[in-house]
Image 1: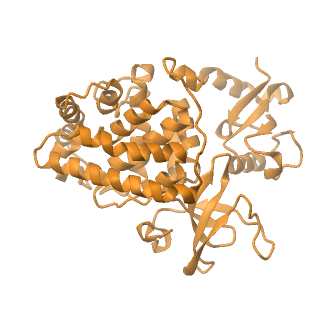
Image 2: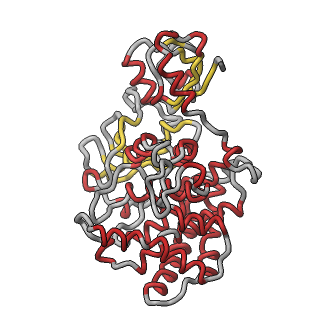
Image 3: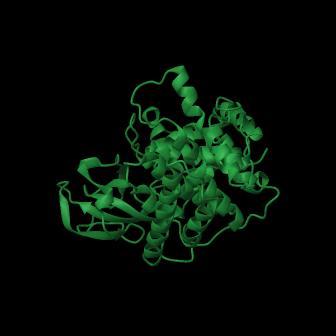
Length: 410
């Protein structure tokens, strides 16, 4: 048995010996570089601080390990390269700072928005799908996410909520490319993810909009009509002559689920094409973090927790964990409360220290708007002017305290 093993904090148990964290020891409240978990309080503390730690099984309390060891055998993880054995995986590096990338990202999102709005309007009016316009529109966004994903992630979070199908397609495309970047996929695959994310729900444009907006349970017949958007979308894309197998897979199978409970074919596990597995995750994440006719938006942090709980049930665990790495616990655009009592919005995050991103304070301790919103880099500013610790204490629901994210100007 391997002595030292990476273990996600949700799988930690009393008696385990933590030999390393997913961050420097100096960034934690733990005094020693290595300790045995002896209390529920330490479990909670690790859960708040880390996504994963390294456990030394030789130093762990064996009597408390048996159940956990069995679960590890049942849930072995595949490395990313094994998921894409036919592709060359190469990690990306940030090539632009947030303030440098933001105006370019805003221009890229504007071009993508205009492009997809025009394409969808033409389809709604009975026209054909302009795949050439789609291909052209995604390129600037791919460029921006490749340089630094935080700016596009911010813009995906503050999207308008009044045109759900259109905005959902825009968000799904951005999340898909961000995950592809995290996975280290080549540019051609990022393009496929961008196009597939935009188009996997295009069939809904041919579904009765009253059913899509319904805030009541649908009848069996009505649900069948909604599920029909998969075949409708696939037919629309095939009519364009598009032969990209990965895009077609995203459209055809983005509602399949890891345990076989999805539709239209009830595929499970590795029988679901890999790009469709990615599509399922980004489709779900964008949906539950958006306002819909039948549900309010969930905070990004809560949505991440839900996805993590659904790994190996609805979605492949390895891809869920990579998605969490891609967007972070507090993605750009998240509302958070600071230990000072102030409310801030996450501007950008440091992928090596996810609990201390750059934030912009927009409400004071009294929860009233501040006259001059200020940027705070929690990476370098760990205390308030009075010497109190400054950190994020929790994620807030979208529109908490009446905040309108679309009105925030940088």
